Image (cartoon, rainbow, N blue to C red):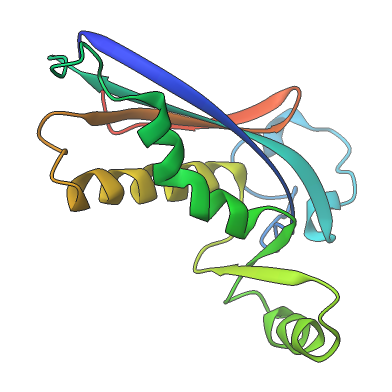
Length: 164
C-alpha cells in the first residue's frame, strides 16, 4: 500500500481478435448450458479506456506523486502508436497474412504483440510498460505503478496489479 495515489485516463480505438477463445473450455464454462458462437475470434474493435494509477509514500518537492503532465508524456507515444491499430498476437495463425495485407495495401496499421490480446493481457502490457518507464527515469524506488485498469466496453474491464 502507498499513502498517495494519482490516476490518469487515456482513450484509444483499436481492433483485435482473441484467437484462443473457446467457450466450451476454461473457467466459467460450467455456468453456460448452451454454448454460443465464439464471437471474439472474429476481427473486431473497441473504444478502449485505459486508467493508470501511480502511488508513493512520499511527495516530491512540489507536493505531488508526479505531475500529470509527466504521466501523460510517459504513455503518449505508446497510445498514439496503438490508437486506430489492429492489435495482433504474432503467434496468431492469421498474423503473417494480415501483416502482408497491411504492408501491401497500407489500409490499416498493425500493432504486433507476443500474447493473445485479451483485456487482461493488455492491462498487464500497459502496466509493464509504465513500470519500465519509471525504472528508466530512476523513479521506481519513489513511485510505484499501483494498478492498470483497461475498459474494453462500458461494462467490461480488466485490472492488473502486482500489489496484494
